[in-house]
Image (cartoon, helix red, strand yellow):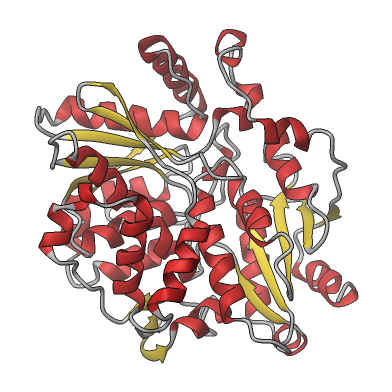
Length: 436
């Protein structure tokens, strides 16, 4: 499979180059030259396949012969070694639990696949790979665990000071080895801007072999399609073949992967983009005007993105039919107060605990269903992180119900190591050059 830049449709690169270069020099994002449509026999019989089997089939169709079949299967079976169950809460309301991986967040799908692909492509004697990643919360932890100890790689994680939860920060800053954490005195958008500028800086690119682990990297996007197909497979087993997804949305890689799955033939009736007050996309869907703005800190911190990078991919997928995009995606936005109300409502109605991001997706799903009655259509909202990662936002009654995984208790025993920097690029560049 060849890939082009969203800013240059004539560009052609292979998967390896797209993974390692991460972002083209023209500042676009890589997309596959053609999006293959999976055969109907496979789609209609998804319930007969396991998650790794689905993942292998989807990835092989997207990547072609860029990775030989046996090698690709080994990568997938190693990376996707945890489950993602669909849990029924009430009639036509299901939650897709994506927090059963090592870092307790959906980012494990992308980070583990990408780290293994990069390790596979790295050849003996090659220059060390420097992975830069900006995180608003969960990406950094998943990338850290995905790359921890991977030979010939070094990861530098940028996170906004005071804007990630305590457990998220521990996941970023307690790894050591080949993982470094930078605490940036700014927002996630500032962290993301520093990473993007580094990729176009001639001096840094001359000295380092830079790549990104953010969702701008195509190797992060592809594996996120896997759990959409797998959710549909689980519902097929219950005799359900009509489905809508409500997706907590920040940098829009998650819902972008869902739309890519739809382009590949997954029969989704509707996608719901659920955001906090950082509502650039819901506003666009309402007004037709795309206007990025500075991000605002909220309880759902992983979604605090005012200028979502992956929207250009979504726009590119629908560049020939903008009307289809607006009919396929509905946008909803909620305040912190509404988020807390949703968390409380989910607990009282189902005796089920959700993180702030997941609560927003549930609220958006219920709002959509109230306006679009369809008794034969299952609504699935994505649970993107384990609630234990956000202990400060729950009432005591709800907090007491949270089962804290053992790896979290182990984290709290480790020493935090982070370097504090401002949001100016020269300071960040100086750090990289002086700590080569």
